[in-house]
Image (tube, rainbow, N blue to C red; front, side, top):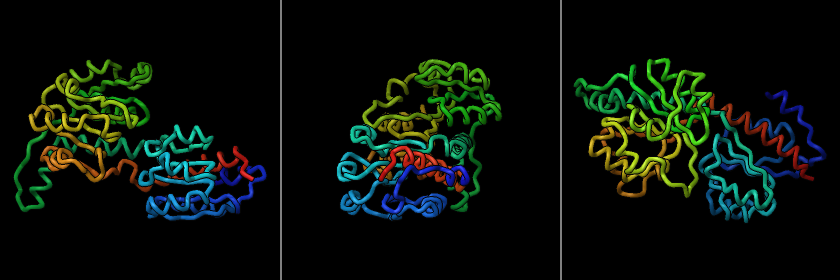
Length: 325
């Protein structure tokens, strides 16, 4: 990959005058590659929003991960911005509409953390099924009491969002003996058939799944995919795993059905606010049948390296395309 990057032609770009600002922690690969190619790079991984608003007009490129929100105000202040690079698989924290209006290129790294996110999903699913959080809490308290759980082999997993991550989760689920149902807004019948899964409607998935796993991209103003109506259609004692977007679920409704016991367990890597703000969020977070991790889906050394490599390649390609003087 490095050889490919170094061979990119830069079309009369003055690299020293092209100013790149990186505002979140990033794998050293990106820093080393950009600097070795002669670019003027400023690395401020802890910069606060107020300071960013003051300095963004001095840069042609901004590179972010999840912490920095490149919203309309940031883009408006970035009068010289040519490229926004997101070192990650999604663009939730980028106002892509505003970027498009101002002819600012946006690049990211789709697929870079597929394996890491899929592995975490399976881990959370197993932890929920075996009630591992309760067992670990008891053991750490010196109480060695056996805690019951359920097997996943022979159960049915319904995957909502059958893209890269959803497909990988399906493959692992099949390997441990689960039946797989797949739902997506696009036609995924062929892909599902290829791996031994079955594409179904959302209602059919809800009615027949022992485990429901979400792998979706949801706009900030979109309605939840799972709300009270959908919860009513689910089987009793369903396990829900969410490593994609918290807003895909109606949070207060989820809490209600966890408390009722219809949802046996909720295991998630994402929250509506991180950390929680509302009382219902804290109540859900602290519930004994809720397992929460701190948005670590892509937080493996391997995934972060791939993210850096792919984002760097796409960034350099974008620089080549725009031909900044």
